Length: 192
Image (cartoon, rainbow, N blue to C red; front, top):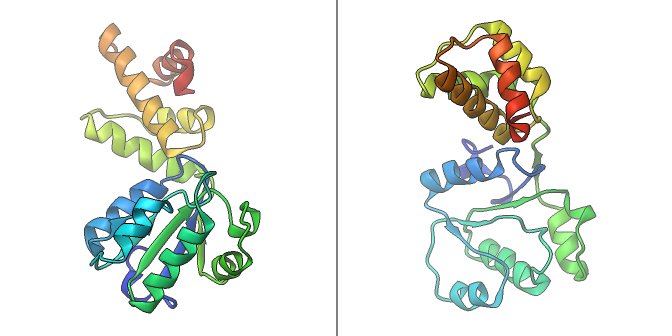
């Protein structure tokens, strides 16, 4: 999705996924590539939009309570009129948003949607392996297998689990093993 952004069919893409699923990470990658400017559907953004010159736009958490429907509608229309690529993120598909403006809901429902699901075991293991490697730690596959079954099913949960395992390994001076991983998860409830 990020790689295909210059060729998005409508120029606007909707990215949906649960909290901590990696949406913000994808937004940052896309911003680095596209030069996108972040806006939020509020009065300040509406004022800035009239004079804003940006190669691309991003609105994160557009389904968040308190956002103004009229402003989001205006941002989308402006992006279309000026042919500015735009990425919108949300936790749920537009049909489940609390939108009071029928034209906005229609516009949102017509957008191409990419949905990020809960990470599977393979992705969790890959992410944890990367976090261990970033800390210059070697782990056996059976440790990753154990952790994938016992950590919160989110990318952030995987990162917290690796931090907890590293902390226990450093504190005890022991090599990382399945047993040490189990101890780490028991000692830090936020990591499991």
